[in-house]
Image 1 (cartoon, one colour):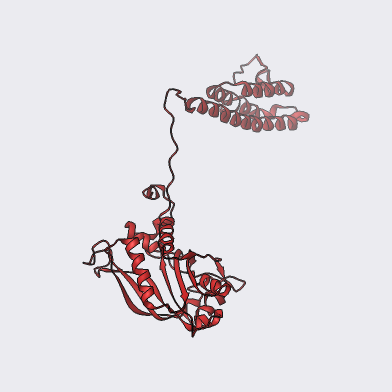
Image 2: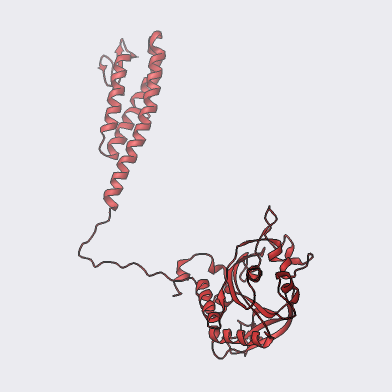
Length: 362
């Protein structure tokens, strides 16, 4: 405060009388108006800072007024104090607001892109298909050439369609809550696309020749080769006099079309509740040609599908005559085929939506 003895400062809102500094209410009101006006009309950040220092700085006007509040007449002291505090708060808020406005205008003027009309136009990037979609589309096309049509069903299934109709016993581990996503209403997220086969057989009589691609869900801990969300494609062929040789021929044709003409196929005995007999189907490693490598873990073979002849008890549940009806079924994981075919080391890469990874596929 630039107040000296024997002078009067209308800016500060004080009067000096007999060597004592006294605050004048009317002049203080004028000071308030002037301070707010200066903040509103400041045209730069430096000007705003000057206003702050003048009125709110450690040696500014308002600290001096508050220091001399004791000199105010008792009948005006409360009003002067209220006005001084109100002014400090209002001015601080106004300074902050104006600072944001000025900084925004400065950034906009400094960072606004300059459009060069002489530059050639930029074409939009062509999108790519996801590797999972690519494998599904190609698998459907391969089986389509063998006469299979696509069938789809709900992701939320009943226990009957997901387990009972597929001859899965009540004590089977797949029914445990540790393995299956059960819902509050007693239904579940399907653990396989096999329920679609049941729904199709319930709705039509043989012959039936379908593939059922779709999303499945199991309580798997996510790691490099497992995911709680994954995709399957399953197949079903039901008619009269369908044999295991027909199944082998279909899967061998699929292997050659999907993995290459030199891929061999082998079958190993296995067990599934809904097929009898049941087999595991392996393809020879397309990377090493069966010699053994890191991809096939030195065995020369890669497990691809579970398959077998449909169990007669499944036919009974859907109303087919098990004496005159035969058929085969198979199922395989889409992600597994994609990882083997494209050399993808971690299943999580398929779900992270990293465009650097996905743009590799066309």
